[in-house]
Length: 260
Ligand code: G3P
Ligand code: CA
Image 1 (cartoon, rainbow, N blue to C red):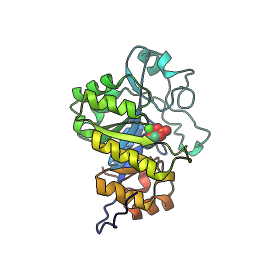
Image 2: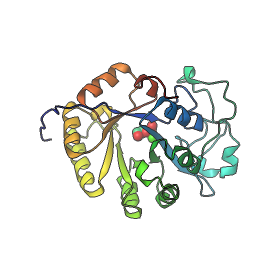
Image 3: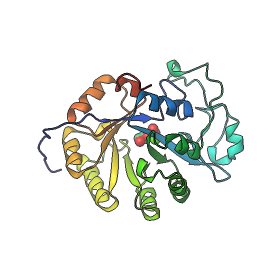
Image 4: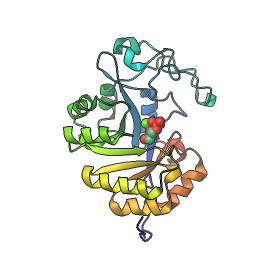
């Protein structure tokens, strides 16, 4: 990894609302996305799946159990069936996030989110599966949101598919930090290779992010983001490094007074 000097100007990181603002409103619902806009987040990060009948919906898990009152896999249900589910559920891991007063939260469609976000929010849309890149690219285009969307994936194959379908789409490569045997310079090499080929934006787990990598990314024009950073001490540390973006469940901790 080459060494780059420290920047003389450090800009504040982009505030990236992970699944909306799940600490305040049910994750990946329109309530959570509206909250992110209200708070003034720079970007909304969310997750896209395809239903049994070919519709694109917003939900994180492949299974319905954690966030809805349904059971089984998203891909085994039609959109109509999924829309009947309650998408506000108490998560035992985060009980304080539960909003019992919200009784009408449903799984949004990508179409619905794009219509809402137009003119209001930049979206980071993670394709959770493979094989529906064309459908995603088309609906993004239909809403004239190509300039305001970054499509992302843990899979470089998915990103290459997006790049072929529409080279104007911003690409976000998400690296998991679950392979400690992989060295930082190997990740960095991957970042640079794909950045040149795909004109990409990258998102890297905080476990493998160092101040050196932050400088390196900045020098290459890559928005290097960390996920999922929820503690204020961590936010402060990566901000001091000059990180490009912070993906967080607590956008409110990084933002000033909410925009009315
Ligand atoms: O974009 C980073 C992050 O969204 C990936 O993790 O599991 O929250 O989708 P996950
Ligand atoms: Ca995601």
